[in-house]
Length: 413
Image (cartoon, rainbow, N blue to C red; front, top):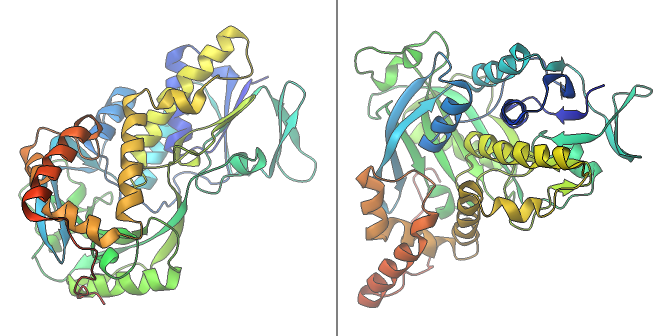
């Protein structure tokens, strides 16, 4: 009988299994459950930061397909500035990437039950019971919740989570060539319009399209498809308002909707206050939380699962049903320290003084120098936080603290 049930076969669940196998857990002790059948559609910008690219390469190697870039650009009504990644940043169709990760688990001999929805998770003597309908029940020594923003595992265990926000996204085609498909565009104008989040314009390397080619001549914006969307980092804006904003945003940038509609999805943001462990049960991936500032999900899922697999293997070796300091121990890792740093920034940028912090972001001269230098990793500046603070204090002493006054509304309004 398998000892460990993994609920959710996305990047969090699949990477947990692959890391657990590397740590020495036997494949017959693992079983993955997912209510979907893969490949399944998944809302996601599809970009892996350099950190995520490195982690995926270490875990799986580079899967075929997708695109590659090192260029990002932050934009708003206050201006724009380039962000140069230190290394490669891969772009994928999420349906393809998730299927490849899950297929790697199958190839390693792990049982995967697709189309199998876990209806209930309940504590049992020496473990947990999973219910798959009215009468079908199985017991496991451990349950790993990798089942997303509103997953049944965390709710059944009564675990306190972080903020649940939402995103909307759709596939578009460009009607002009003003944007560069090799650049990922992040637009913070939603904050101007009272939405605590940002929007994005990413080239979409759908399999079989020009943007998914491994090599070729420089491409124009009109040569392929794009993903446009918006993230609400606090879950305070209705889905209809987010869709309307995205439609206006697309019109402003010269994009035409390809999908039948703009779809929505919840997102669960990591928080240092969140709980992720009960005896015999733990969370990983988005069930624990994604980057609360930038909505990055794949890289944190892989790294959280690396940590979770190592801690669970230690508990198995010690014959324990608990993992002392599971949540606190994450903060001693690079990923955990950066998630806490991103959470602190999100509390400010998406809080009541968001316009002031938006001005800080676009006027922070040292931050802009770092962004353009190509020496740092996007979303991984925790180790430089005191230097960033000190340099900005000097800037404020010379020029004053930015205002929280309203900004001129973005053209998307």
